[in-house]
Length: 285
Image (cartoon, rainbow, N blue to C red):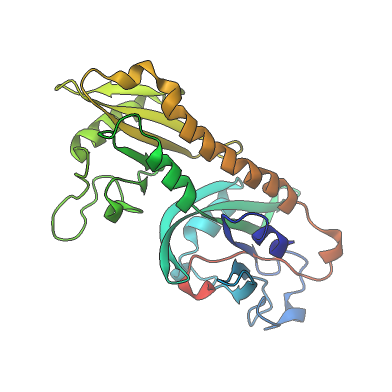
């Protein structure tokens, strides 16, 4: 099931399928250290990912807390609900790319027995967002629900936090906007939790335009941000900035369909413990 999913869309980098110890059929003992998909105890935890030549490779994931499984594995398992995790920067074929992960817990009779994840490469989506300008002076950025930059005028800020200090130059991020002012405006916007685009004006007549980006089946919400010059022209044309957000939602639709497919327990595998997701540890690739 996992390998065809990896090849389903060019944006899909990899699929992980990780079961709890003896969580699928209670037969881990039968599969001790079998191939690249089972660990020494027989637990199924492979990561399937694309190679540069288009082939799909398989690595066994490190399923330890020290390997960083809290966010993508333990939390969705505990919450029993799909999660959008990221963004984070990861080297793919020698190039650093921005990734997000969709993490879906697998349940049987209300009990979680594993996780399926899909890694989504954000390169093209974020490039399209960067091109969605009304004026050359406008700066466009995208912030995740946990205040991590998915897109920023300053490339050094990708996958860093709002107002996070970068390097020795203090707080970075002044490429195109005052990040301290933006942070104050963003938190004011977040406090209101509006369901529609909103312009937060500044004392000098400029402003920041915030567009909520939501995804069907997921509770996480991103925010598209654009600078508004004096006069707040963006207030008169909200649809022009909503369009890129809708593009992101559209890209997630295929993932939602995928969720329902992967959440089905395959009868053919019931006696064969075959199926598991990936770890955010470097060892997975």
